[in-house]
Image (tube, rainbow, N blue to C red; front, side, top):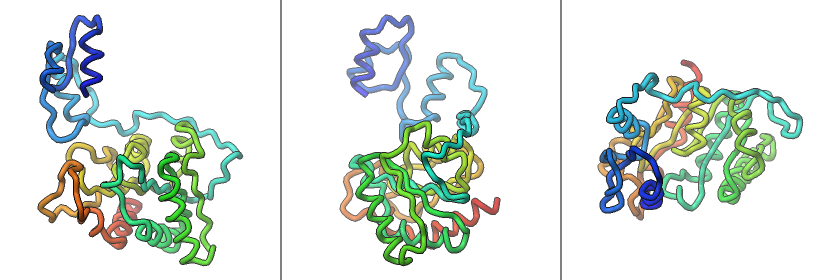
Length: 245
């Protein structure tokens, strides 16, 4: 970003490395072009130019979480963490609320996992709509836990470690779940899993790869077919497969 490159310009670093973005990159001693998304793949190219050995090519297992079982959040014995991630900057990545609700019901009825919704304060309205759909369709028979904006990052990581499954869009929470190395199902549309897929082996990406516009790298769009055409059945099948591995 321009801001990061400006900070680099005025720093006293003896060696300055980063990504090309003319004219903000004139301060850089070493520069690389970004291929696709900002991601580990691109960062590794800079490390190579700096002659820094790369000993691990993924982040799976790098995040060590102390399992602190606290009574302030009453979690079900077996649960799935669902992160719809509907903040303003992720709207192009979002799936339909009714589909998330139908998926949560299937996961509960077929796999025995209770739905736990997570997200920031920006996600509250979206997650509340999902929870309402679940209650309406099941007559309050499924206890939905909505923790949007209610838990810290540390508590989120502890909860992810205890979860049986994670389902969500391409987001930071998805990568947290993957780094903790629990089963992950990532819903991808405009972004490219070649660069930003979950990196643990117990993960499956669901994406409509037969669309000509996929991936578009989050360009303005008036149809969002990449996400709208993802079916509940496709995502649920991925959940069953990742849990059976």
